[in-house]
Length: 112
Ligand SMILES: [Zn+2]
Ligand SMILES: [Zn+2]
Image (cartoon, rainbow, N blue to C red):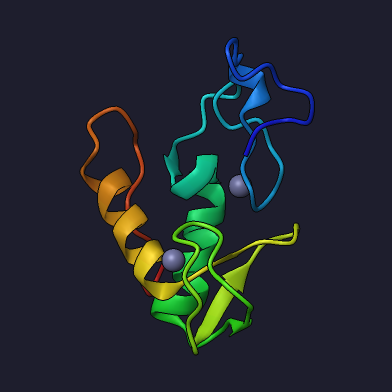
């Protein structure tokens, strides 16, 4: 998401915040993946979401996924903010970051 008051014609790196922890992921050089309507999840949150939902069986029912905007009847991972990410988006985003050559990010494993 964009910091409140961001000029849409002149978006700065530190205007772009992770929807889940609120960190300025771009400015801090943290890997991140974009979803619909400017939504964003950073690699740190994605790791936590992956561990909780894909590896574990965590998550809580949420009204809708922040990343794909779809309503799903399944537990989703929610960050510190009022946002949620569904299983499909976690997998998709993890796949994107995992393959990206720009980032040293890999999918969490059971023993990490
Ligand atoms: Zn984050
Ligand atoms: Zn989703």
